[in-house]
Image (cartoon, rainbow, N blue to C red):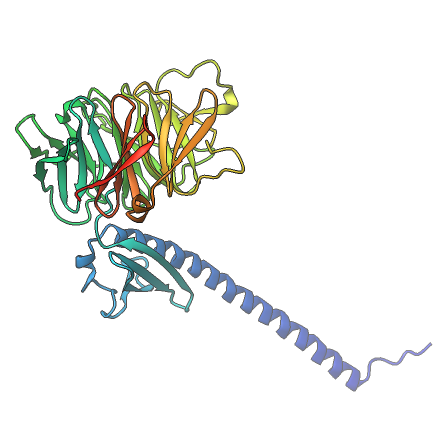
Length: 411
């Protein structure tokens, strides 16, 4: 048996091997820590870039020039505790009136998050309201509310300006237009009184909404027949807000849990505020909220109670059957009796009847599509659709004859 120990050379070789392994492990630890920190900062930067984009989308284009961080101004930093994160914004003209917003956020160690979107320099006229008794139409054109009669030719009744900025044009009105609600891009719900308390006046600011995680961005509004309740879609917070003016807490948030609401882009409600349909643009489907007692036909797994206690959500995502698809649903309207719901979807106008789960569609004319359809209203006789467009005009579709009249207001 050889009892001789390790030679000096062997000890040195063993020491070198141990040192190399130790250094490698230390390097891996340092590298892992560095990558973990970079990933953490990238996650924060992604959150900040999304928040900055949401803020910019509700800012008038003319106000962007000269803002901190907007090129050609130098990059700027966020408020504490994110004051080490730097952002830069580029406003890039596209095909008028469109432009691109390009936002970049850089973390202290160089993690970069970017976001880009195309939006409109002009107001998005995303809504239209019809007075079912007098055939008056109300829609937003730039910063003005216009009310016209559906005659030959249509006649302008009144024009009123609620203010400046990107107000948007989500509208809902009660019969006779004694009250209109306009949901702006950032201002919240604004009331307009055509006859009461005085002719053609904008109401004062409504009570502020509760604090939220993201800036409010309103994308639809519906009102019941008796002016007791208004429902507003909020795309940034992925929820609905219910306004009850006579309640101690006038605002209540509605948000389904499973599945969650994506980006509400249109709302329709029956005259009695018992049924609310929502166009979920992000999830390419329709969602349904019920305030009245749920009919016995619904199984427990088909509904979920809203935490607010105001009603129930259907857990079904309503879509046309394959191979048909829904792309980007926006404007919505409901049959006066509530039996059918209608939704604009890019180049189509869908009709959905839940009782028999039937879907039918009508193709929009090329000239309507070119004007970017966005808002939908239906007269009281279920005979005429009015389609508002982002580029500021209204088209008319006669359901009885199945024809578009080929005219736009304003011409």
